[in-house]
Image (cartoon, rainbow, N blue to C red; front, top):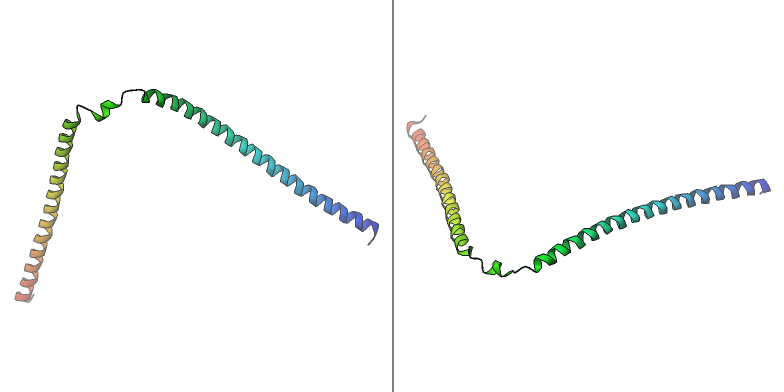
Length: 121
């Protein structure tokens, strides 16, 4: 192998390593940029969470006994029961109509088949 060939091979290896190193640095820069963006977004989320936690702690100071001793609870329970009864009634009527139509269709079909068999048409 001549000196010129060695020099050419060294140059090819150097170029290859340089290109590989440049790609690695570009990928690292891109990764650092993405990590910075993620840290920025996490900082914004932390700020918003801190604001929300401040509001929640103010709400927690309120008296929560009203929830368990609500004066409107019996009225609401009665209304819910009425709504449940109405919904059950509507469902029952729909079921009855569908079953009635089905039974009537079956009876008409049987009569039609018997009529065909008797008349021979």
